[in-house]
Length: 245
Image 1 (tube, rainbow, N blue to C red):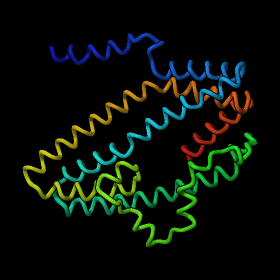
Image 2: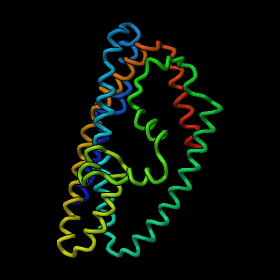
Image 3: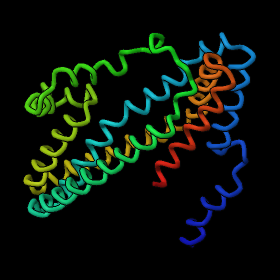
Image 4: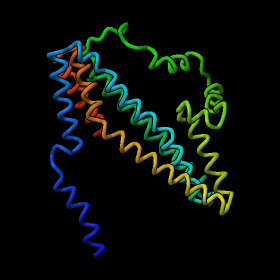
């Protein structure tokens, strides 16, 4: 029966061997990374690309997922006045809650200072990761900020991964598709399928999490020693405290 067919995958998951469960694999990989970083620190430092590569793979998928989700969401509503009302309420909610979240994060970070114990020399850090933000902070006014939202071309936003530009293109695309009638419905269906494909890719990438965790932990312990585990644990505690607040 259909009920039996539906139950079978759940039963299969319950009997899945413990070593095939992803978070167990991640925990084992973290433990192995700690051992490698402690006993072979030079090797641990060389494993940094494993963690960086995993993060880069995740970041690679953010822009297309957001694009497909927003385009399909707007195109599916149909009534543009409803889109405007929902958009206005969403923007107000987002700004209010994000401001509160930032305030909580600043207060928790200021009083608990979770990164203080690492004693990292700033000169050893890669400044390229924040270079674009520093440049914007120095040069950006309200007008230049608005102008920066406009990409040089439609696909440039997706290529660069600038999320504000991706949102602009996605919103325009969603409105355009919603006014196209039957052809627009076909495009929306195609975008929805593309979104499912991107989520499937993310699912494939997440399976590499143990490798990323192994490389990141081996590098951390190899670079900063076992004491880093205490600082990382304190950081996790701080994160959960801020989340509860």
